[in-house]
Length: 346
Image 1 (cartoon, helix red, strand yellow):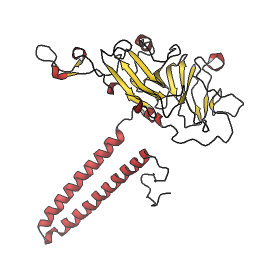
Image 2 (image 1 turned 180 degrees about the vertical axis):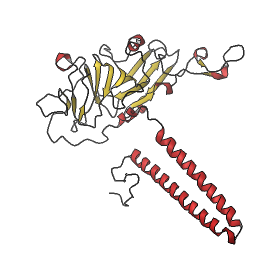
Image 3 (image 1 turned 60 degrees about the vertical axis):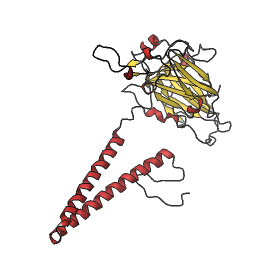
Image 4 (image 1 turned 120 degrees about the vertical axis):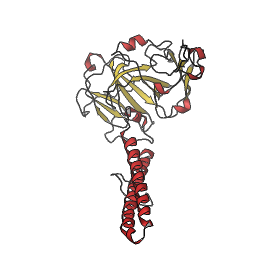
């Protein structure tokens, strides 16, 4: 219980269970409200001073200064609010790292934990068997037939299942990540395979390495995501990540002199975007998901293209020795623009 009852602002009220993002949003809305209220009071006071100015000449200048300051403050508040509320959250699937922070209560229907696949919508209460392992090929009985997916988490062993649907076999193609906190998802009939991951809140491993050149060859530059960074689910835009240790002659040039030669001061390390990644080393219990999120994609999926690593043919589960970008380009002529790393139980 909160010791003080906080007012409702913008339809939001603080409770003992309010999470940090909602608390920050509450403070932001409160600050905006207080700012606008202060501007309103300042304008009223400026009007009073202007009204009294015939009795004292310097009051008119004070009124003008106060009104100017109030209007300036109003513009700053309006611009701040406009910028923060209209920035396009183009990849709302960043919210997919909201996994159960505490064990969820046991299901009241006593259904066994796992993932339930239904041919009908709304997860009907039929006598179906749960799936606890990935299915690389759903086969004729389920391929393009799944209309809803039920999720029953195992609070007793704290095993939390994360399902990802793919429209091609072997966990690739158009995909849809299903929020593990929701017990039932209605989906379009597109799935040909389903990856069922067991989330690990305390993953073991060193991290994930991305290389510009051949497998384990760091001479051309590499980028590492440490194990400590893979808490929850790691999601990054590839163009925001830059290789380290790239030889100067292989770095990107952003400015040239009059002779067409690169200015040394303008050299910068290439990013992980495009086809700059040649290989990946998965040094721990993680699943690496390359995602292309298109401008028309729904934030909740399906997403235009996904490729999951390690693949079904990767016996040592270390990742791809060489990423075959031509295979990826054949799927709608796109290459991934995001990377998602999920810590899993093996």
